[in-house]
Length: 86
Image (cartoon, rainbow, N blue to C red; front, top):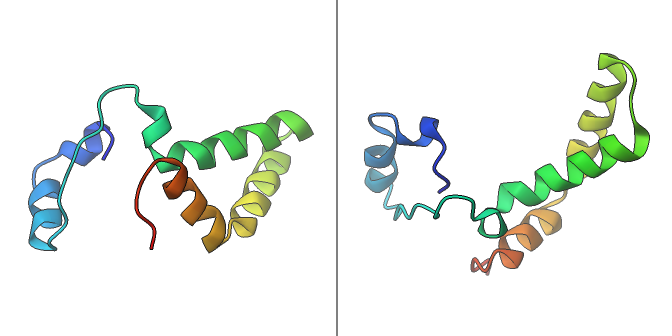
């Protein structure tokens, strides 16, 4: 897990451990090991490519990109970060 403050509020770690999830925090600024960063990079590249000039256009681009993200994309994000995806 990254070191986002919201992930460290009371109860989050206990809730994950109760669900038998082992919590391992990433070192600060370890973007290459955080799968969500790959999605952010993809979203940012589309915004740069299309350069929306209105809030509505920005929302349309982001919504389209999120609709096109497949399970395969998500698995690739995790694989690229050296997480087991099988």
